[in-house]
Length: 523
Image (cartoon, rainbow, N blue to C red; front, side):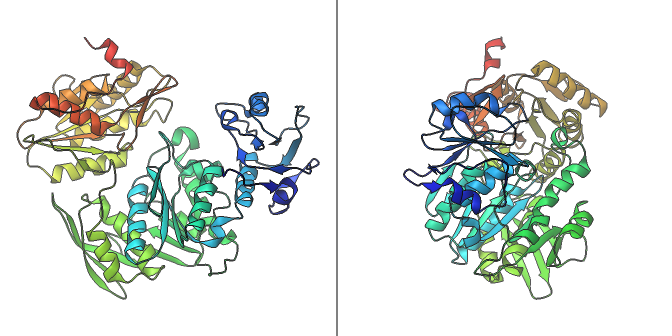
């Protein structure tokens, strides 16, 4: 939160739709926090219940760190500072309080939300770069970083959508920097947990809704409905001085289309690679150097060329074009030039070369559909073998553990199963589940798939297996900067690990292999 910025607590609540069940003290606060360890003097501490921790247990620590008032939804909480009981969801209240604290920054910009299972980060980056190319001052919050003018901020190790106070802080800084359009990568967790409440979206974009996060949502339908909250929220966006678009960009090729069409406002546009739509693609060519296709709408036809390879990037770029050209009035020529000059998105089909005679790619693919699309792209980039390295996260959707290796056995030549954030689960147990999935598709351990618990050793193994012209693709972590074992986040970057493995293989100078605790058990 901003040093020295103070607000009357009564005035803050008066600006929000929060129902308050107790007296609001007449005090001035200097920020809002939900992590007791990060509370600073004069701040509100929002006590959240549910999930893996109970925020009420940490009220004493928050007060010791300087919390001036505690806000929560539980009755009869006794503590050494005033307690304000609210009716309803504390996370929702937290988001509104944070937005009010920063004077509702989203209402001063056009806010574009991008959601979906796969492709969110890439599509968010495409929209952002098209806006910049058009001379529009834009900001971006993604799972990789937040970009505000010339400043690039890391959004964390394993962050999906940041918490509400951080989001509102970023948005306020965008307003202060003169940003007119903010592009927000918006996850289902962020939507369900109220982190993006009061972001006041103007334009909602979907990539796809495939198998993911069912451990949290319970079913595909519940997951789809969580994504749908972004599109439903368009109707609640307050009037903005610069006008309201309230538009939805929908993927006509995805199974989410019928539901999202029903819950979205009337201002809808669709994109497709297969169907009649507002914007559609044909004559797709995916080469090792670039992706090319012809894009059509009722108003224009354009030749798309982009260095972001992969058939799935046809859909991602169509979504970005639909949002920027058809709803934000960016000239098509400007958008085409922006896509042709797109910088690589960190950890998305990122090539690593240190002079080896085979290809190596690092990608974030961590869902069955994402892995299929990554392997489909890899297959098109080589006439030789595709070698896949990936894991499956602990304390997450268990069905993926069999689905991911089933995809790999079918579409890769060799598969190496390894660690990927096992957290407090048994890594050997996770790998056993994955091996069973591989075997169910005809995989034979020791012939076309292997289990290697240490991720660094798994990468070394795959690199050593590679022959001239092969392609090694390391999936699941992408841009992420840590790996979780137990409750500890160990610094880890797949790209650094690949460079370390290649330098060892080629006997050249390079980085050291990052440490993981599984190294201690490698003989």
